[in-house]
Image 1: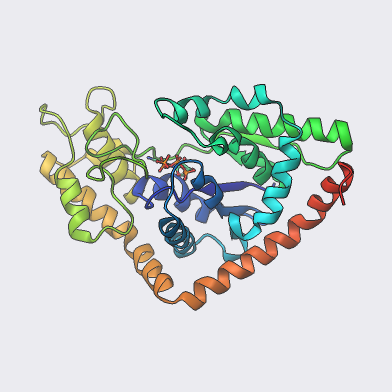
Image 2 (image 1 turned 180 degrees about the vertical axis):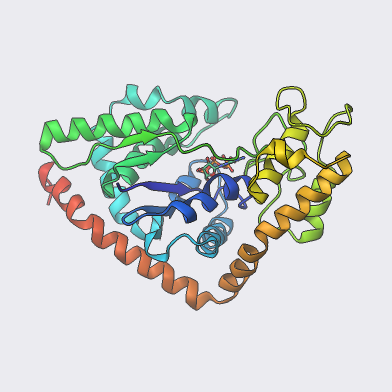
Amino acid sequence: MTRLSGITPSGDIHLGNYLGAVRRWAAEAGPGDLYFVSDLHAMTLAHEPKRLRSGTRQLLAVMLAAGVPADSLFVQSDLVREHMALTWLLECTCTFGEAQRMIQFKEKGAGRESVRLSLLTYPVLMAADILLHGTEEVPVGEDQRQHVELARTLAQRFNSTYGEVFVVPRGVLPAAAARVRDLADPTRKMSKSSAEGNGVVYLLDPPEVVRRKFRRAVTDNLGEVRYDPEGQPGVANLLEILAACTGVTPERAAAGLGSYRELKEATAEAVLAELGPVRERTAELLADTAELDAVRAAGAELARERCGKRLDAALAAAGLG
Ligand code: AQP
């Protein structure tokens, strides 16, 4: 079963991205699975070119450092011609109404004076990412389900109009993973693009900053360390993080912790222990440009080789080339 998952360099990588996605990819990667840095997707909102480039390298380094296999990794823009060529074919397969119905477009565009056209069309780029690489399963959360449905629709429509070219992918709910919440506001998920970084633990934050963010984490005034996500969301978030880093249940993690201070300290230390080796290796990779560049080039070459025939078949089927 080939699976494809991506991460967008829309800001610095944080603990939620790591526990909820990257760590799992490293553990679950099977033959033929692909993991990519979706840098083209980071351009749907205002972006800064230098940050985009360094953010892309950072994500690639973290994925590699976390143990995602080098031969399953690539950067989307290294295959920009392939991805954009297929995006065009699929835009010519998709109706305006279908693109307009995407909930994320409405959500991400809401309240903005002007939105980039790419915010409307990026689900088609996502469909191209999926279909180009012959993906069978796409692990996605609820928020991206509609986009995988669009990819299915476009694959089926293209196949029935021009001939069988694409595997019709399936969206699958990933196995339950930690959903890390913002430490300063546990009603929100931890996000790269969070306006305020105080509640976001970035993977590359220095240890003293990590400790400070946990010390200041919002809890409640009940003063009891127990796992009650409804009644004590801040404490529950800390317990879930502690549990994810120590391999026990949140209820178990609560045992023996007498105060919020102890809970915060234990969680910060568990996070630092879990992230330590990944942070060290990431720093090495970011310092040694040659190694990271070599992995990146080899990953791009492999991905290009694997998808070339499918793209040629799609172009030919549509009457191009
Ligand atoms: N808080 C989180 N807890 C657990 N998993 C999370 N993921 C994101 N936030 C959390 C998972 O990280 C992967 C990469 O996500 P993405 O780059 O495609 O964008 P996202 O989900 O929108 O992530 P962010 O951090 O919230 O970025 P912005 O602020 O740009 O939207 C996905 O597998 C996601 O589930």
